[in-house]
Structures are given as structure tokens and as C-alpha cells.
Image (cartoon, rainbow, N blue to C red):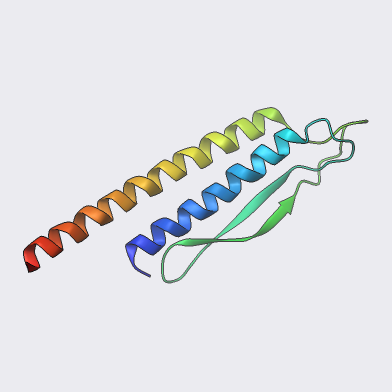
Length: 105
């Protein structure tokens, strides 16, 4: 897998994780709701993919969910940092490609 595809795959998984955390927070007070998270798998050729969604097995609160706001805050922060890192990686790949094309011209 080329560098650009690897970066894009990381951004996709990070975006899915952010969306799931946002959904968890939105359902904080939903009766019986269980927090969900995305499972990430490294690919042999590089990059990552979402390999599924896990549902928390923690007991739910009476009249509510098992969503922990502190956990969701950490998940959002971690996914945000990963997203930014993947964007920097894509920028570096773009610069490398630009230099290679300049040398070829």
C-alpha cells in the first residue's frame, strides 16, 4: 500500500471512532444504551481498517446507559491526535511526491 492510501485509511478509522464517541455521548441518558467503540486492525501492506464495532459489557445505570464521559473524552482526544497525525503524514507524502515530480521535470 502506498503512503497516501495508508494515511487515508488511518483518517477513515479515526473518523469512525470520533463518530462513535459522539454517538455514545449523545446517548448518555438513553435507557439501556451500551457504549460502542471501533476495533482497529493493522493491514499487512500498511495502513489500518476498522474491523468491527465493540459494545461495552459494563452494566448500564438504571434509567440510563453505561457511557463514561471521562472515557469518551480520552477517546475523542486520542482519535483527534491520530487524525491530525495522519493529516501530517499525508502532507509529508504530498511534499515527497512534489519533490519527485520536480526532479523528473
